[in-house]
Image (tube, rainbow, N blue to C red; front, side, top):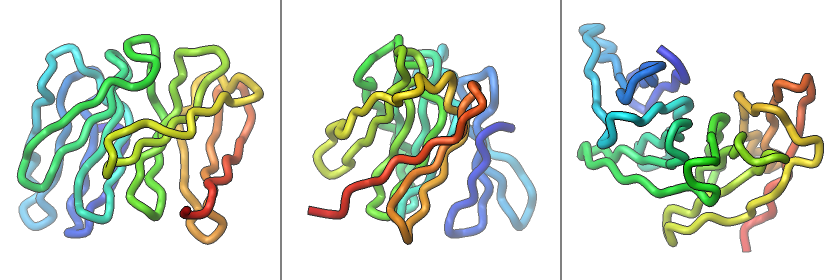
Length: 163
């Protein structure tokens, strides 16, 4: 289990490291359900859950952003840098928009995605380069994302107020 998050119904979700599967646990029975992603070579890393209960993931191997709807439908979008992106760290803002870091480009890039328009936005280089950004956290009161890097730095990205 990797990249664990808990949904609004108390169900833990996780990626199965080294596979193309995402799992969830029934909190009443402790049974695990596995969800296979559409591509056998997918390697999801991190998960986030939006206010509508949709589970979002990044696929490190193929440079994809994916979403599992409560109905079970899976949708995926190629990230801006595609297969070279190596997305890893991920956070969800208070407007239900996933953010992630493409760790493949040098320097690394912070990327936002708007589910309403299905477009990537706010693509910004991380000035220090960043190494691999593995963990991210959205802090709603200040509208900022905090992240840690393999180069021993901690970073902060301020998310602009809603237009």
